[in-house]
Image (tube, rainbow over all chains, first blue to last red; front, side):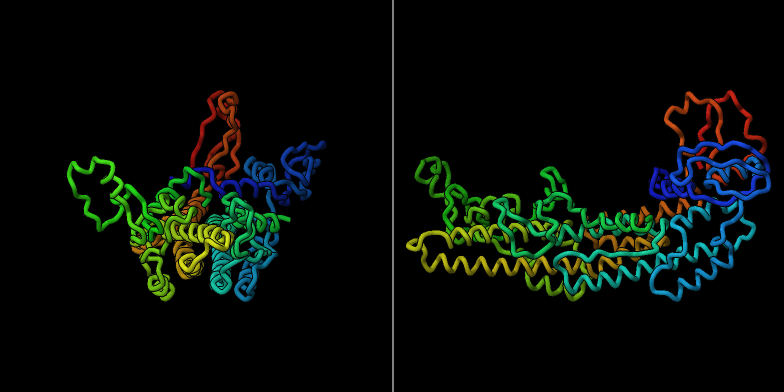
Length: 226
Length: 265
């Protein structure tokens, strides 16, 4: 089955484990533990029993599993704030940017630390609403494409897109833009003469890099991360 | 799609037969003419009658794209658009892009169309500049008529390119996106898939597998990521997946000597 291979979802869920969460340890440890994996923290500080502190998610899960600490659910993950985000999503036309990039993956890892079952349902709804928004935006753009179907595609900036939506619609859109770019490209002659100027000026190298249009989506990802 | 020389799609797409009109007489090629009767017996072995098997000027023949490329660039033939890329077919396509069975016409409709358009435009340009740059005393009515025909074909080809783009990026793409994102009902999709060209089919599959992966992941979770020298490290280490932890009983330091078991979810 293709879904057993290492795909984007696995990579995303792994990277999500690096986000910091608040944890209340039940033990004390005076010195710091050095960390290799995180850019933000180079070490996990001294543990004082009962005092909340920030650790990466994967450490938090390890500690909880060993019953050495208690994870505090982040603020945005409580059912009330999720429902509020959901109503806001339904009203707005653009995607909200209040959610962290890996919200779905984080929620899924913390699923068993949460006490209310309704959070996952609200979360699924949220993901569906956002993907639907992207879908309708794409439909609009496709209708707009027909009007001016030569030349460059505009650079599309989508702020607030998160990892789960990127993994769902990303591959399709990347490939669709790549194909579109191929159909738009004009063939430059070997003599170096320019053609009617129609078509994508990015295709000036003949057939090289036709998927450079598709890599605009990677720019979206980088923009969302920054 | 990047088209290298060995690209199977490009090779198969160039099998498209293009009707064209020869501009000169070609000897020894009479077998290309579909109306010719290649008769005569052994007497065709003499030199004189062998040269007589020539393809006449202004005869309409059909050749595949890959064969035509050199001839078109040299100006030996005048290209025309095949029937299913012609004006009537284009109009029909623009009227109802979502339902057209492009697979029946050519499995690689878009690819073949694009290659054809490129060929027509480049070859017309080359031949037209060659005619225009030839010295004045060689120009006559026939050549100007030829240039005008080239212009007409180029315009037609440009329109074809526009139609291809419209068909691709229009209703078909939207339908494909919708179907790819919906996770239920594979049966409903197969009658839609039967009408898609190869290019669109691959696009659809990319989208559908991405969604299927996401669904699978959201139910089952990730596999444990195993380090490369797993056999060296015999200690059973903790996983990153909470579901496994929740279902596992007892202490984590058990089984110190056993080899690391790989648990797949």
